[in-house]
Image 1: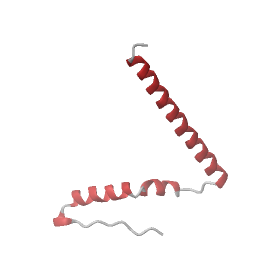
Image 2: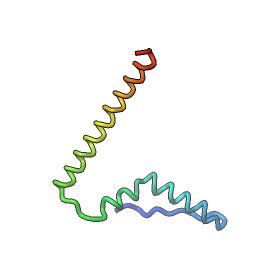
Image 3: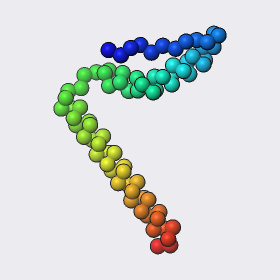
Image 4: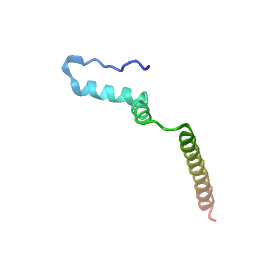
Length: 78
């Protein structure tokens, strides 16, 4: 179980406390974890989702490398 995240409200400055809370939640990936637990995902479905996410990351990396190669060739005048 995760400990609760809390922030102090200095001098009644709620806006600053709100920004601090949002930053802490973002750093802890709290919202992503909450969305992942929103409903049950079967282990086989979870593996499929992880595989598709991995394939997407690989495609994106390959595209980025190809684009860099093209830009290098273009800068040399080809």
